[in-house]
Image (cartoon, rainbow, N blue to C red; front, side):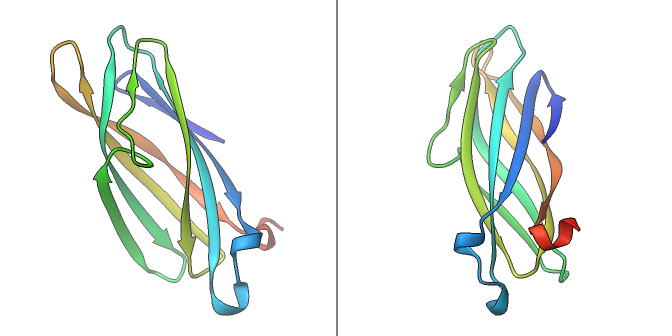
Length: 128
């Protein structure tokens, strides 16, 4: 697990290799990641957008962005947390992801960025 606090928001990431959805012989490696977002501020926030940078060990780079996460734009009151699970496919056994969330301070309507810490995606064969 990896965790980072920026702008009063803590983002924790836990990753899982999905062997049942992977086919190494065809260069298909599926990973899931669980994100926990915790609001340490004294004001409510709304997650508006996400931006991901995905790097595969074959040199392939992708950028993914869009509204919310897993189809929602969660609101977190002071002290609350929100958790979701999503996934990423790679063509190799290892890669890396990081990114950011665009949040809105619901008290003053100001937008701010929250960093998502870099984390590795590793198949079990690469852990040896």
